[in-house]
Image (cartoon, rainbow over all chains, first blue to last red; front, side, top):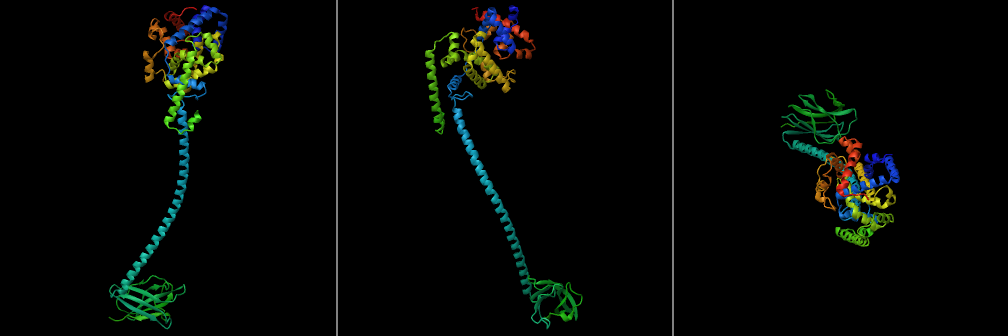
Length: 267
Length: 219
């Protein structure tokens, strides 16, 4: 090997910088052992390099030294250099502990509130249903009240003539009242005592005008609800009567089934 | 010790008191070791004592070489906190692996420098921080480095610029990038399109010239 050529390739400088491959490196080391000239050359290169680096040195912060020796003495874990070594780790312990505690407490509270929220949700649904029922009841009561008020208004209205329909020999105990306003032709029926009929039959109200029966509508007994509004009847009715007819009524009354009847009082 | 701390739920003050105690303890040890260690010791003696895991020898090593190594590390990494971490790791490695140092293969400082550079280069690769390195965006710390006042231990009072001023331009460029800007030879070759062989021979010529400038003589 030509040592001069080997040296002038700059391989020793690269060696000193630690930039050779494993193979080149062991080759240089091998030659170094056998060549004092090569060794002397390397020595000079190393000296230049060391001086150059001492000239361009940067003093690290004092805390770095403290930290390194704390690590060597086994006092501190590896890590960033801080002005107060390991205060970080101490603080971190507490920060971690605090975080874990907060997380646990939060989870518990979250579960707790979720539970409460769920049962509240159930109660709320129930209350809303109840509220709806109450509102429904109220509406029905209100409607009935309205009905009763308007019934009372009809009953006390002097424009309405009250016709008492009394029981015939067919049904001596039966009783009903007709309220008839001759001007507006409105007819209302109030059942006092009328027995229930079979499913296929219905009562039918008739008004007798000029001796002829006029249909005033059908009705059922046993249905509560105050006055029943019947068909309008014009002036001239002298008598009201109720017969039993097939469901839906008939154009002409079956007289032999007459239940109640009563004359319209003059005046 | 840490048990002592954890049992005291911890105001900052408790922690502070602890660290004042800790650092005074450490600095006390430092003073002791300096007293028992001569200002200058031969490299052979230093190596022998380091091999024997002499803590005071490591402190001597730190006091004499940490700045030179930190300079090399910082120029590669460019970030103060990470550079400090790397310097720590380097000294821990030196301490743990000192039996691998072989004086027949080179001077102690060369070995230290190689560990430091390798560690720093590994770090840049693992953290991908080398990417913005060459863009040279001037951060606070970088500007501190570029400022010559920050460069220390100029024993003979000659500045880096003075040392390099006699070099031909192309050699100046090579030395500057390898030793002052933290490039490796292959990075330099690749980035500036210079054949690797040329990088090597230019460095060779520059290092020969610097022997005169730096007063290095044959031993």
